[in-house]
Amino acid sequence: MSVDKDEQKRREDRLAITRIVLRPTGTPLPLAFMALAVATIGVSALQVGLIPADEELIITLAILVLTVPLQLFSSIIGFGARDPIAGTGMAMVAGTWAVIAVAMLATPDGASIPSLGVLLITSAATMVAPVLGAKGKLVAAAVLTGSALRFAMTGVAHLTGADGWEMAAGLFGFALGALAIYAAIGFETEEAGGPIQFPLLRRGTGTKPLVDDMGEQVEGIAREAGVRRQL
Image (cartoon, rainbow, N blue to C red):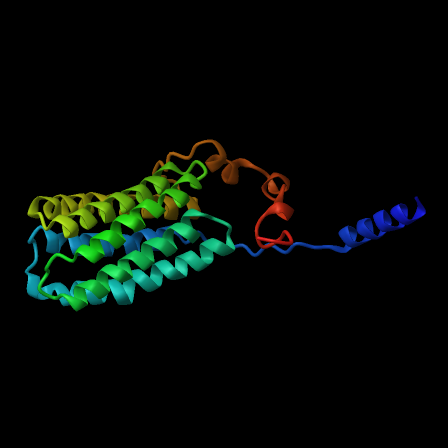
């Protein structure tokens, strides 16, 4: 019995000297969504014929040097902040746009690529995970859902070679770009705390970060990934 008490005392002593350090960061979502808007609007302009096909290289390079690295950077910050949208979601979106850009470089004539279609549809299916982890941020979840639909539609266009699907994916891409810009402005103004706020449709747990005090914010932190013993 005394052994059990000694072990309990040692556990309490270890707990008493344990400190969890939280490093505050700015939200990476505005940056990620702005980078997304550049990629989806650029590719949409190609898909609907708004810009000539011989300018495809410029769009491809813009995706590789702007969208992909900025979204990957946002993902790293998101994982550190334990945000599934910014972490998992933006990493998957960045990787998928990188695949699209590489495929565009490999086939500059704009031909349909069935293998790319399979990859895009698979990527769209995996986006279900971060969407379900959105935790009440409905506008952010809508951007991820829109990205998944955009990838799926483009994937079907590559699989079928149908111009109708290509046009539909392009038009939807413009709408997704507009939503991404709206979301970027909304999260940026929310972070800045200015007088003008764009509704982000936070619900349930999505509202807690804005109203809970510090004690409620860190409640349960010891059970989160990166703090508990195993991920």
